[in-house]
Length: 336
Ligand SMILES: [Fe+2]
Image 1 (tube, rainbow, N blue to C red):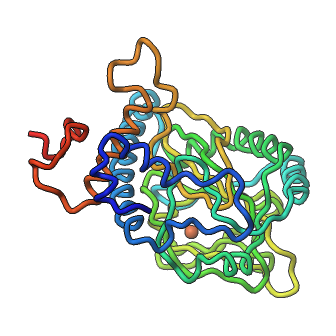
Image 2 (image 1 turned 180 degrees about the horizontal axis):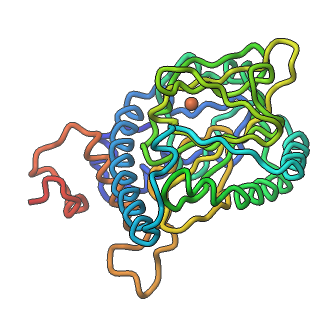
């Protein structure tokens, strides 16, 4: 990544350069790792991007929760608040089809393939190398058949997910993988914005023998257990959890992971898929804000443009006020 000060100095092109930094090429070879990993400029950029993203999601989620309470005054305490996790089961016929489609999806080596607009992680962690990831799990490519049955599945469980969350929600991106035997993960939290959650579907079931997810709830480790099509939505950023691998001799454990976002109306269709899926930096409701009846400065591109420039200014050691080019005025940053 170019030096942040150089990007800042080229004020007219800064937003374009920054948007390009995060975009990966279309066809990524097996084992591809973003050049951002380990780059000191990218790490500064990432920290600012995260701070802005978490703030945007907090405000957006607060408004979405208020909206839900105002329009559904009969709704009680969200289950996810009282329990930290919610576990459900699919109808067997749907679970069978989901498993069949999953197993037909092509196995692919890990690569740093992120959906557009989703978070990246430039921190160089020993557990995030392609070789380590391929050893722990085998990823699969989303097929059209899988996407269809996945959307059908999400529509079927939508009321339960809404009741668990206590607000409307929208499905984000999905990732398909199977956890390999004997490859338990470490205990961790995901450190996403609090209002974004992970939904995990286990097409072939989950449990001690076949592998699952263990969550620490009230200091007690609890393992998700159930037959084909068991699923869970949980507080992945506050509950410690770990991947429990299948025991030796068991087959790999198929898993579908879906990013769940707060929303102003529930929309259970997945929006993207990838091999390295995090969370969208910004609430995607701003997409498609264009046209005559959008107030000046509020087209999607304007909002994204300003957010990129604010992140840049946050990531930099601030220059003197006098050195700030016109392009950075009006962002709320040294412009008075
Ligand atoms: Fe996790």
